[in-house]
Length: 275
View (tube, rainbow, N blue to C red):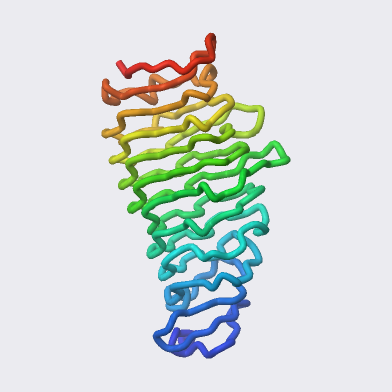
């Protein structure tokens, strides 16, 4: 309908299951959000803030395409179900996600922050994720295309993850830290892969994945593809004995790339350089 424009939205008017309040040039607030991938041009763009007492029926698509949203709201994230996929995708003005806390038992978080305006991602406030099933938490394309993202710090995670393409084309990313955790990659009791996890991260200097445990299968030739400035990778707690394609992963990378891995015989970290 051509009449669905921000200036025509009246207080408490219901549009496609979303009840909102719009008052001229003031901030737009939604009290109840029913998720879905439908975008209403001019309406979602007008949302700059979400009140803390907003009720979210599900994490999936909750703030999808809210391009005017300035920061992740400090709502209750503890009971959003198993899906957080596309939750903040295309929130291009959102630079801060520190309010996202208390996340537990998530199966799908694909595209969660993709193409958002995040400058840093510090998820130390997340609770441990412990899945009861054999599935892993799907983090594919998690932060793909976040071109302002500079640092990532993740701790206190437990569980199994699938991080393929998670930070692809995050061209401003310089440091990645996933430490002090008890994590594995792929489905439980199986080998996992990091395919294209940092593909295109042209300014990345250091990757600290010392929090990952368990067996890693495929690294993939695009794991650090395009990371021409990379100088350190730390895999000291991961079981890489079944990872057969390190040659493809490191082909053409700088000779001064520092690599820290676990020696399976002594179970101690060993340090070496790419040659």
